[in-house]
Image (cartoon, rainbow, N blue to C red; front, side):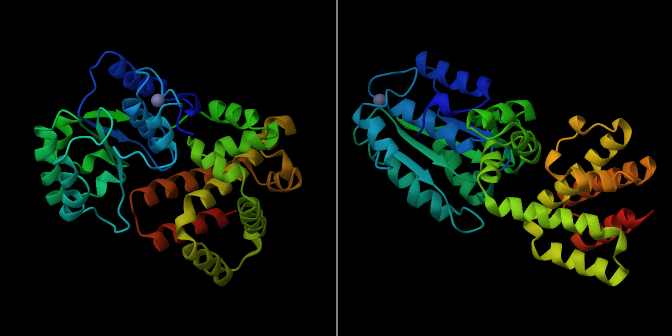
Amino acid sequence: MYTFENIVGNENIVNSFIKSSENNTVSHAYILDGKEKTGKQLISKTFAKLLLCENSKSKPCLSCSSCISFETGNNPDFFFIESDKKSLGVSDVRENIIKNLETKPFKYKYKVFIIKDAHNMTVQAQNAILKTIEEPPNFAIFILLSKNYNSFLPTILSRCVLFKIKPLSPAIIKQFLINKNINQTMAKFYSIYSRGSIGRALNIAYSEKFINFRQDIINDIVKLDSLDLIQMYNLIKKYEDIKEDINDILDIYLLVYRDSLIFKQTNNFNMIIQTDIKTNIKEISNMSTKNLVNKIEALLKAKLYLEQNSNFNMTMECLFLKLKEK
Ligand SMILES: [Zn+2]
């Protein structure tokens, strides 16, 4: 359900949207930028629903024909543009946007266009949309969703109101999960694994697959010391095959070493995040403090390199040689 009450955090952005609607200062073009699963669609669609609502300028009334048709995906004046290709080309823009600007809204005040992954628009597509953003018909509102606003032409950036979604704090996510009846212990470490994204936290919290996946990685960590070089390369190969999950994998490593270090220094299980794997944590905490710190540093470095698109295998080789050091 698209309501402002369902949006967690990001109050500044939500309030700016609501104010602009109440004060009739809605812009023609917005960029909503943020990482994967940080609420871009929920926020932008709720704003679109508000703009199209027949009864209210402050929050979608949920009872007018516009609000109802919005929720079922049949609002004639709402356009959600996504491409199954890697890029959004000029023909996508023409077909889905420019053509639809030739006629007035079917029923409501605006025509609202949300473009998913707009950072993937080719330069030609951006230039095509630029013309409409520069001289938009009164009824047209564009919201470009992006994961990297730096890929927009400066001319696009200068025409759009840019909002950046920041990751939420673990405390906010933890409370959100507890409100959803997830128990304290699990909520605590899901909030850490979620990297500031409610969408991710929910995915993880309701996924049996994730529980098994995590257990599998923890088993790898426990065995790591006893692996010979060939087995180590096999392990890297295993992770290469599930490369898209590498951030999760390295986060699991990080949390295990983090908890082991904390337990080593406090000897107190109340201080650790993952109380469900106490035995493993206790065992790993037998390493020296220096060794644990080195491992954590090596993991943080590897995460950074991978984020900057360094070579996967080389980064992982260096990392695992470090992790195996005694
Ligand atoms: Zn309404």
